[in-house]
Length: 339
Ligand SMILES: O=P(O)(O)OC[C@H]1O[C@](O)(COP(=O)(O)O)[C@@H](O)[C@@H]1O
Image (tube, rainbow, N blue to C red; front, side, top):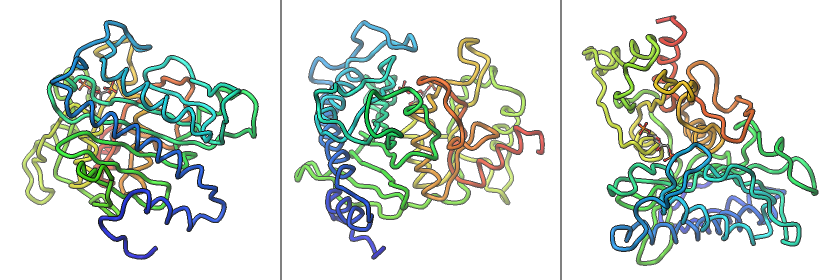
């Protein structure tokens, strides 16, 4: 792969990848281009959120019993509407929808299944902190006919692509099709995502840890010991690590992707209904694990590789330890009792 030219548009980058993919039909490029249009529309609403009636809740609750924020709803419908008519997807699964959203038979349908967390970091929408959109793309198993749940409940290692948009100090797209990770920044003047972070690689070990320490009392003992270890001074291992926690998975992951470090959302005993933590395997953990591994990092549930986990239901939750390889491996050693 020739040296990436910073500043090329994401469409040019996609077309180059397409040219290097013998069986490519252009369907994937067009699907991602529609996702990008949806993200630009969401970016526009996010950037003026304080001025228009799009903050606050819709008053309804999602499949997890969480308040649905207006921007959640807007993002969900914007993505589904844009992607539905491309002719390249046969089904969409969203964190905000209880069931699979199948593309009606009368619509042109394609080989891809799109999974989305339309607006990640809902708790940060009203306070102007970074939020994001996470996506994961699978190729369907069957040639046609109704899409069945087993075609959607797939291991993360079967993803053909994954990525996220982050709406922060700038709006960025970070994605991978399994050939490394690249980052693009939206130039609002041009309305184009331009290559700004070619071939992102995650440092082997970081100096940052991100976790909601407010849950400390509810963690298992090994998790507490690991976090205590990170806070214990030892210059040789750059400890104590610095604590950083935005409370938006995409934001915390993105920082650690660029600077190194570990993000954790361990299982906790706070809510017996959620023994396996808060984050969703299909919509959050698997797509970010795909990016992490493509950038030389890793992701586990504390003992097993996230990309090997077989989802049982659409809305499975999973503990998540993701980031620099050495840091996640050390965390796993604490959780297994080796350390
Ligand atoms: O407020 P908590 O418990 O620390 O949880 C924060 C985590 O929950 C999330 O907001 C969950 O995602 P959603 O906003 O998509 O529901 C993550 O982005 C974030 O890492």
